[in-house]
Image (tube, rainbow, N blue to C red; front, side, top):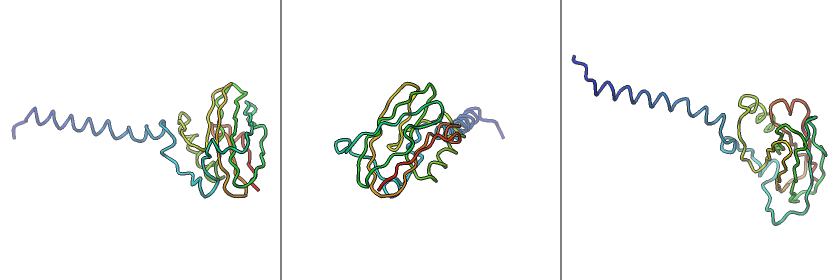
Length: 166
């Protein structure tokens, strides 16, 4: 059997392309946008993204490098649409993520594995030190809606809070 250099080159090229593509998927998922990877079941469990033109009030929440939110507890009425004005008073990157306790813990476990993960979720705002941002959310049910900073080490250090919805 005679060796065909063109066929051999084509086989090597296909193998190289397949080999290069295979690891790209997990790397892109781990370091890429977080939005496509999660369904926080927001509409049923914690509410839904709010319409910025229907905000009933704004609530300022500050984040600091002592791993605390101020205030750590907020009370609102069911059906209310709130604009959270989130201010990072620290130097470290912090975030405010709304979610069920199970979702926050699962998301935090992912962040520990892929700390460079970027977020593009309606229920979260991530801020570098000294920055401010906003999150508009409608709370459709009464109950408790936890929030936390899911940057590695922050949630474990106690950077968490709750929205009490009556």
